[in-house]
Length: 582
Image 1 (cartoon, rainbow, N blue to C red):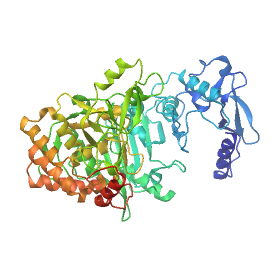
Image 2 (cartoon, one colour; image 1 turned 60 degrees about the vertical axis):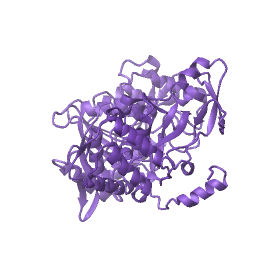
Image 3 (tube, rainbow, N blue to C red; image 1 turned 45 degrees about the vertical axis):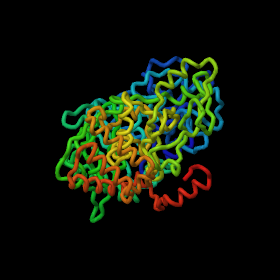
Image 4 (cartoon, one colour; image 1 turned 90 degrees about the vertical axis):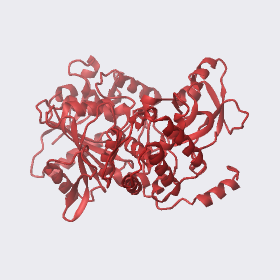
């Protein structure tokens, strides 16, 4: 954009009014279809090694902004790899299959004046590049991280700084980028904002979704490669001076509290008498999400870390207890992708019809409906019809149907359930995939665990917190979530769990952000601890109650919602609508 280039030059001259500006390195990069028929990708073309580009691209000229006049130069002769001390970027968050009705993020290479053919050819040009950590599913932002790594000097002092969508810390498509920071960089700082509103968790002016700020120095350093400083601010800096003071404090941190420490919280960022947030030193997990983001009370992530490693040690708890923990992938399988089930192309094996009756052969659970899904047992809401000539694939998909369904798009301030249970085997669709265990008796205890406060804490820390009051997971990330190892429970514990489930299965619960005053959730937690996990200590039960209070106070859980759920009025409304009986 030529206007942006000239705006940048104007900013330089206004900052240094006494300095005569000669030649600059401000360039308007070629973008889109060129006169020679090639397709340029702007700054991303700098990723190619100079001298290896096709001749047409090597000859691509760009406009260089100068003090007296613009001039034409050749890009590859102006910028070289391993040349820069600092690269700072707030790249576009474009990604494939963006929501067409949303203002952000836009789809990759989509533009008002760019045709579909040009857009597709630019995507092909991007794919031809030999990206090391950039991922097309993650979007162009990950490509810019890859580019920054190429441009930085390898002297142990060069540094990159990025503003990125907070999903980069959680989703599998960003895994290679996180692994690079964890193994090839040092002095990594991850900054997020634990505000209730998504727009107030952004550093960009027009994003309106939670973002993170990443700063990392290139090169390994034995004392801190593989670890990072995670800072969670209570709110976005209100002025440049406030931001400057917060930055100064982070540089002075020494011997920070660690994720592995007792659950006592993080180091305070304090300016005068005001606390702006907290910081914690955490390991940078390989092939896994980074969880210590958008958290107001760092003691919660310390407790979640302990629990994920088989130890229940909560804030205020005096004595810890062992709990068998594993990954979901270790104990269960997940149902087929919604694309395999009902995509309109040849890939889909079924058609879906809304509504369901007892005589339908293939019932399904498709929609999240918070008011109608307050109790653990829910009813199907659709049925599936196998497509002609898809019998074999349909039967394969049906082998992974079951009674247990996990809520991938949990609205903590609306939904009451992380795990939904159907009385018969029902195929889970879209946001409600099946979790299928080897033994049917495991269904009961895992449903209890997933809807308990301990299960919620692990889900909340593992999920992406981009939207207010919502924790999003993918089918892939769900398999890497820590959970109760149901295989380690005794026959008596499993029998107790089945009985408890049947006692509570029709009891309607409040949304998770109101768990602190929900008598059914309290009873579920109490019985799970006492009769399934064998933890009867009053101290432990008091700590779980305190945990509920702390979780309900987290901005990423309550999302700023102040209204309370009235279960009785909601039930009467459902009866009038004919959605429930009794």
